[in-house]
Each structure stands twice: as C-alpha cells, then as structure tokens.
Image 1 (tube, rainbow, N blue to C red):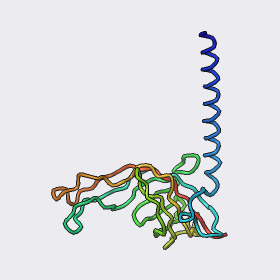
Image 2 (cartoon, rainbow, N blue to C red):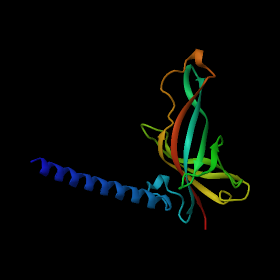
Image 3 (cartoon, rainbow, N blue to C red):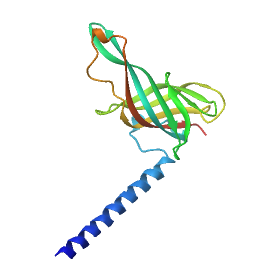
Image 4 (cartoon, one colour):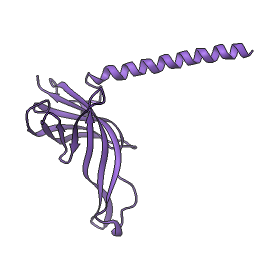
Length: 180
C-alpha cells in the first residue's frame, strides 16, 4: 500500500511541476507581446508595443481634508522600472512620469481605468508630453496592468494626521506603445 501511495504522490508531483512550467512559459511569452485586455484598456488600433517594464515601489498618499472629511489622497508614485531580465532601466514618479536611463521621458494622462478591489486600478494613459531622445520619445500610450498593492489606506487619516504621508508598496507592469 505504501508503494502505491508513493507512486501516486510522484505522479501528482510530475503533473503539478508540468503545470507550473507551462504557466511560467505562458507568462514569459506574454512579456514581449501586447497583453490581452478589455477594449477600454486597449491602446488605439495601429499602435505597437515598444517596451514592457515591471515596477516596484510605493504609492505615496497624503492625509488631507476635502469638505468636512479627511482622507488619504495620492501625492505621487515612486517606483523603479525593471526589464524582463530584472535589470533596472529607469523610474516612475509624479506626473505621472516615466524616465528611462537613456534620458527619455513620457508624461501620461489617464484615458481609462479598471478598478480593482485589492490594488490600485489598471489604467490606459495617453502621452501628454515627452522629453529627451530614446525609447520613450515616441510613446503614444501606456498601460498599467497586473497591479498588486498600492491602495490608499482606508483608515488613519484624521485632523491630527493632516499633512502626514503614508507609503504603500506596489508592483505593476507598464506597457509602452508607439505608432510604427
């Protein structure tokens, strides 16, 4: 009986290992192609993916009063950008702005968003301005997808906290598109 259990456990391990490998292969292959998203978050027809960057950082919130309520409001993002080999390639900051190590920058403007119950929303942004020459100088659209974390705290912002900051860690994938 013990031998049969060992054979079954080994069979389950092989199946699980194969599934994990298959999922890893699917995720890797999608890194260099446009992700599948709803129409509201898709870039305009004709735009092609020029860069995919993974972000790790913080969404920084400030406690402020709006009307007679106190709430955490987004002050700025602050994140490092990494390529598919996990090499640092730039950073993301207030604007929202993305800047690469090649000196190119793009500032985005939100066009559409998809709210998430557990993390900051997925976004489609259009390029509002550029600076520098490099990979971001031709970007026309940006997607923020696969977000984890980063939501404003639900509590802890009262009159005595006004002006204080709260950093909430997040990760996201940014996809940059340009017209060919």
